[in-house]
Amino acid sequence: MSDTTHATDISEWQKVPQYVRTVLPVAYALLSAHNKAASDTGILAIASAYWAPQSGRIYVHTEEKLSDRVKTAYVNELKAACPVVFTQKTPDTSNAVQIKKATFGQTVGSGWRGANKVLGGPTPLSNAIVSGLLLSGLGYGAGTLAEQLLPERFLTPGSLRKPLAIAGGLAGLGYGAVNAGTINKHRPDIGYLRSWISSNDTPMNPPQKTASIFGRRAAGGNGLQAPIIPVDAFNRAVWSDASRGYSQAGIVPHTSPAIAAATTGIVTGAAMKARSPIISPANVINSIASAGVGLATANVAGRTLGALAGLRPAAQEKIQDTGLWAGMLHSVIPPLFNSR
Image (cartoon, rainbow, N blue to C red; front, side, top):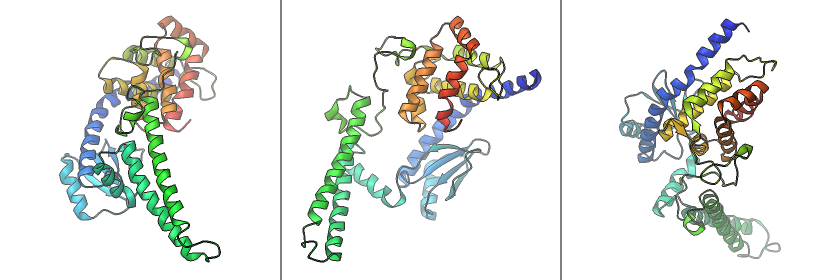
């Protein structure tokens, strides 16, 4: 790869953070508008929303065809100056950004959401009640059907429906307990009992540990909350390593332009969400997790970026010389996008 070609590649990839700064506020605004319109028209649980920045279109994807009445109501509620396309085919993600993912199936989505809403949810408690009633009913129905199909020498009438109904109710209770336990694990400040009545959308904190990566310890116990990532300086360090040359064959152990663009884009997005030029690893973790990435994967990435950003410039340059900087970024960034 020639120096000219490499410089051109770097120049193009370096546009990514600025692109994030441009489109992220618009995407957040459209997400908020979609959530309200989809909730008001009863399709929030079954609809995924995609936004194509170049064309300005919003694609609303559902497995089942929506009625004209629902489509008209959604467009009227959206109140956004952009064309809306309803589709049963998943949009091309290379040209569109998914801003909302469907949460439930078409059949049970509306009923589940409505029942949880009546019970003040969705919370672990409302989940337990609703799923318990649903599974209990299914168990009772399945038991009744089995009793009718099987000969009496195998089953006494009425002997199966009740145990299956009880088992279904207990399964629903267990589902709620798992939800409450998850909230309590990541938000111990709430407490286990209050976790049962806390919203399922309660912001999650990463698991608390005594020390961060490389053994660094900062204010806040584990360093996750400490603002140790100066965004502009860290992004410059990332691009500095990428500008030193990268080989697909791995001959030159420096950050590839694509990984550099993804890294700086993620950090820039987290800074915009936090509205601060200096952020913490927790900001990065929450930003990644809110995009649908698993908390464990987000945790590793956030801690790694925090560790690299927390090093002194001389230390950063030293580990860039050894290839460790690029190796860490190439290890934690691709999993965020389910690719290598």
